[in-house]
Structure formats: structure tokens, C-alpha cells
Amino acid sequence: MKRITLFVFIIALTINQFAQAQDPKARQILDAMSKKYQSMKAFRANFNQTLENTTSKAKENLEGEITVMGNKFRLKTEDQEIINNGNTIWTYIKSENEVNISENDPDDEAMTPNKIFTMYKKGYKSAYVEEAKEDGELCDVIELSPEDKNDPVFKVRLNISKKDKSLKSWKMFRNNGNRYTYTITDFTPNPNVDNNYFAFDKSKFKGVKVIDLR
Image 1 (cartoon, rainbow, N blue to C red):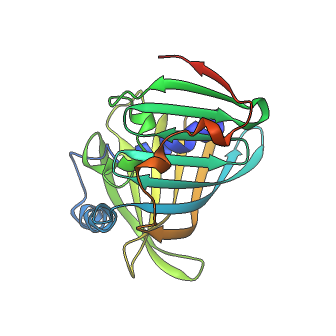
Image 2: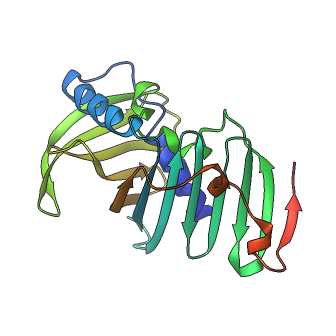
């Protein structure tokens, strides 16, 4: 549960909070990236998450897929799914064949992956770092740091393609030594989805146990 919700948190962290003392060059690149994604009705992305800890030398990998349309999203990994239609959240745990239902809190930034591309506009400072290649593609590297000194995340580093302003990857640095790297492995703009995709269909999960927490 923690691993999948962490990706949602990161998406929120990379959409909805960056800004007052912005580096003009960094802001221009971030604005171009934001405009690109916000022009899409929906998108689907496959991703890899890597967790490394500098102290324990631990390393974990996770693959997943997320589909976003407006304030709705559906996030899938091997272990579970999180579905949010903007009002209700369904968290399906595959090993237990169990779904937990809760109300969506619009103020809970950890549950708003649709905000990943506007996060830089409030609460973070941005700075241009350098140009670097990722999988042979030249990227602008932008660093975000929280204005709140008590934030457990002290830095987020984004790699943005110079060619088309797409977000290639981002890395989150936490005070506890954990480093989370997210890499987009496949991206589909405007996939063929409708509102029904962002709701849990009990009939497709035989014998599922429903726990309503609302």
C-alpha cells in the first residue's frame, strides 16, 4: 500500500506546489512542460519506481501504470489498484481480494496525481541545474526545494526533454535517506477512456470483500 500511494504522492508533489522565488529559466521550462500536459484530455503512462537508501544500501523496484483524466486517475501495480473518480477512492488489494472505499479529499495533495505538472507553482523554489542526457535524449535538469523547512522531502529533481518538454523522470530526496526515482517508460496521450474507467466495477472481481470507510 505504501509503495503505490507513494507514487501518487510524488505525482502530487510534482504537479501542484512549486513556487514563489523561481529561477526564470527554470520557470520557463516548467511552464512549457505544464502547458503540454494540461492540453491533453487524458494520458496514460507506464513507469518504473526505484527506491534506494543511502544508509541501509537497500534497493527496491516497482513497475506500474497510471491513467489520468482531469481530476480522475487509475493507478495499477502488481499488488494493487487505486481508482479515484474525483469524489470516491477505491483501493483494491489483490492478495486479499479486498477493496477499501473512502471519500476523496480535494485538500489531500498526496492523492492528486493530476497535479504533477503544476506542482511547481506554489510552495517550492526552482532552479536550473544543467543539461544531461537520459537514454540518449538531451534534457534540462530542474531542481525544486520546499519553502517549508520541515518538509520531509528536501529536494526534487526533474529531467525534462529539451526536444518536446515531456517529463522523462524525477527523483525525490527525503530526509530519512530514501531516494525515489520515477522513470516514464511509455506514454500515451489521450487514450480511449471514459468516466466508467475511473470507477470500481465489483462484477469484475469475483468474491471481492468490500470495506466501506465513508
